[in-house]
Length: 206
Image (cartoon, rainbow, N blue to C red; front, side, top):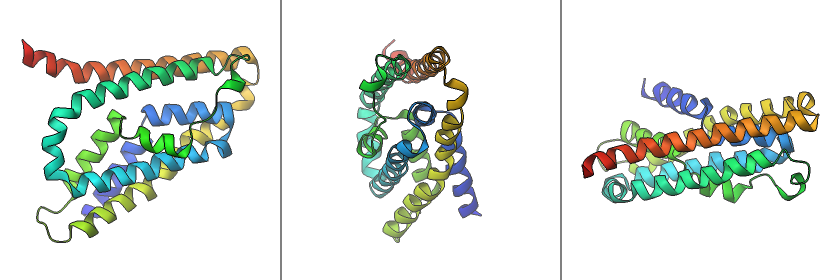
């Protein structure tokens, strides 16, 4: 059943660890679930819009992405490294008031720099869009709807879990250690993604 396969794919890709979910868990700890809702909505609706555009323009975008994939991936990884620093320093008492949760627009725009989001969107567009031109608008709309509906509850688990950790992280030292750990995980994720993107390009040059 293609519908079940699509929903399973989106759910699995949405709930597994990645840049979005690490950021949501950290936001849940530092700002609570309610203040993280715009971040979650930005991810879900931004990803839905991304998959709709990619699915509609797949043939043209595949050629464009072959040239722009590496620059986009590098820009995304650099941004992730910056975010890892922001997450790490958010546990320092003197810096807490200067750091705010990521908003709806920022979270939506981040999907275009998120390597995991690109993998999820491109694979879904290739696997679940019809081969012919007929019904492309409807198919792309349903694909985007599936992403928005399935993605939101999956990523909410991370923000909710982060909020539930707040009482155990009430001590400034514990919160600092948590944020340093999450920041380090984000940095490792960014460096691993960057390595994964650069190695094929370097191999072609040699």
